[in-house]
Image (cartoon, rainbow, N blue to C red; front, side, top):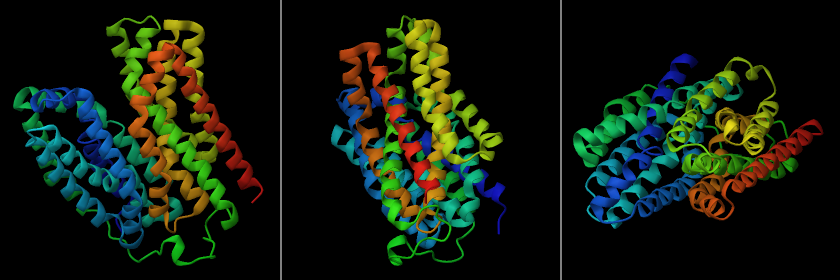
Length: 391
């Protein structure tokens, strides 16, 4: 069996490529693609939202395949689909072509991003997968740090069409070989419904309590992705509303990425010794604490807000992978993870628009909405902790 460290590195690098060439692509190319095909930038982000919705629909099916056959064939296929989608995007001549290309990308995103990677290591290592999940997110935490400058450089050098073709080639030349080197799964693990009434031996909850825990968990994941996506779309504008200059707002917003990686390092080095529910609850409170800082201190609290938001978001990304393993066990993890992430992907698709409306009407007051959601997520995790103590 390949060492867990090697598997983590392979998946971490492959995930960095997958995120950089999909999730972080519109921030750089949406405007120029829209100008080229005769559409607004918001329409191009609408095509990206379609991809997120398709990824939500395909996630449970991809997870079930990983449960049965392991992650290697699913992730390798996602590289091929990513390549086809990016190549199709490079040839777009009108908005409909862009929507079609992002629809293909949505298939790859639903079977080739974090949920698939987490399911792969759980399929291989079972309850021992927590550190591998953390390691994968440490690598992929640099996806925006690598992806945004590289995409911008490629667009300046080759145009946006050339940039898309280079990313497509990288999936074939780097992503596909990396995922091909993953160890093969040794045996089939049936999905949960294949053995009705049979509790998973490693699960922390009995079947009669798993349903309520799953609902609470899906809510927490949806809140995490809503806040993360809303801040990614509106953070500079919010900071300017607090009295920060445009240049300073961009610089402070850039702290979120390193703070996310720092949060994952903290999880890897220290919080991994604690119960996952404790680190998750601390993480959900980081964003509300940041809002409190900027609410009380104004622009003087802007840096604290950005850093706290990034720290919490980085740790929650790990919790999305580890909490289902803790509560429900390793059997059927992939399909269950896909279902748990459906609400998160749906709200993620609508987060920029919905939170944008709140910012238009409330200005900085919109942050109290996201802070309230963070507190609600913490309360949901507290309820889950009570369920586990009384299992």
